Image (tube, rainbow, N blue to C red; front, side):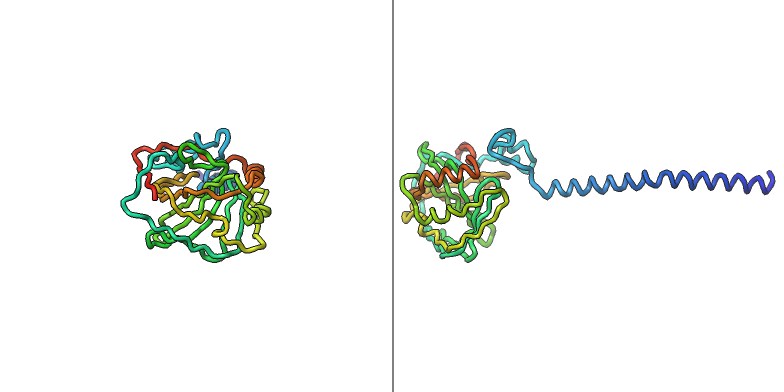
Amino acid sequence: MKQSTVSTVCAVSLRSSLCMLIALTPLLFLSTLAAENQHVQTVHTKDHPAHWDYLGVKSASHWSMLSKEYMGCETGNRQSPIDITTTHHGDHQQNLVFHYKTSQLHEINNGHTIQVSHVSGCHVDLNDREYKLRQFHFHSPSEHHIDGKTYPMEMHLVHQDEAGHVLVIAVMMETDASQPVLGKFWQWLPGQIGQKVTFPLELSLTDILPANTQHYTYSGSLTTPPCTEGIQWIVLKEPMHVSQQDVDQFVQIIGKNARPIQPLGERVIEED
């Protein structure tokens, strides 16, 4: 083959290769971009837990099917809430002392409840162990039952000690009397999901909590996904008081938000 012929063939071959590379470049770019978008979507999904609800296909009976992280809602054997019917007095009397300060409050409507946090520190002492108050929130109707009785509302005061152990104090709410202090707080309930409100007045929770701290206690779980177990529950015997108007206002904003009663199993409920 002549040299000129070889040069011509090589030039044609080179042009073909370049043309093929140019043609494939957009496809390679799109493939890479698609892979990156897929990675971003996966990260985004992982960072945002599956949405759950109290009604329809995302209600409590379906929580375990919404995410593998929620499987404990179905497979756990120490779930909350429960019906407190069979109790026995504990071997050791539990010493529960509230140390709640007057504080400004921050409220948020998270779509599942009205959640409230404090500015200043509040805590309870249980058997000489300190648990700091992280937040409190509400459910209607009550999630726990006492001897089969359901209350119009229930307040959960969520605490945590330095080791990360969670203590939740549940207070039943009965609509047999108005509560002026709580009524002032209720006027500022955030009506829209995601809305945050800073309560303009300072409030002490001791002004609305029952004076009697006798209670039931048992080992349970969170009452919302992921239904984590290992939660110590204290359910006060004496309810606090609210008006029916307060309950109606909460339900109008949030709706019914109580998880159904869970089996007690072999757990023991102690009474103090």
